Image (cartoon, rainbow, N blue to C red; front, side, top):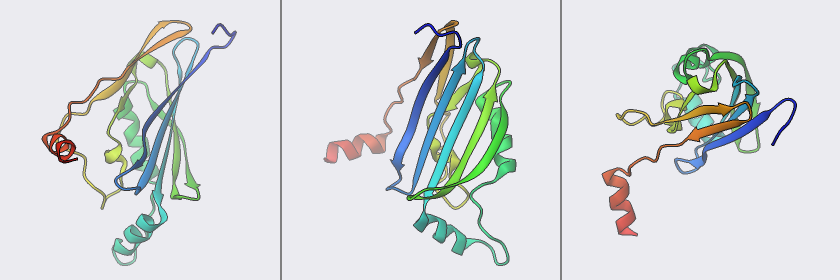
Length: 165
């Protein structure tokens, strides 16, 4: 598609409903001509989980799913030249969360972890003790971006669960 201003949109849906419907996580990568662009993430936890985490907060403290300092620190995990632009609270029919936007200077430096469990606030399931498998991008020309989506090998537990079905 040849446009005067090229916009390639790659929607990487890590999980619509994960962990039994506890949260929704969506990532949208927008690429401009020349390889710059933005990453927009939406993270929403169910109302029941928010209530549970709020009840578990230390006395005198309130639980807030939107941690701007952490989200700003997370920019470095996306690769060189990635910075946080904005972070706003988000409320949907499903629950509460946030929308954060990062900008990048070079799509080929961008990397996205395929496992969204690291986004779960303290009190959630910790991420596995394995090296992350990243989605990476390659700018072939001013209007062609290649997405590298490595397949993950199933764990022994996943293989066992599949064979039980």
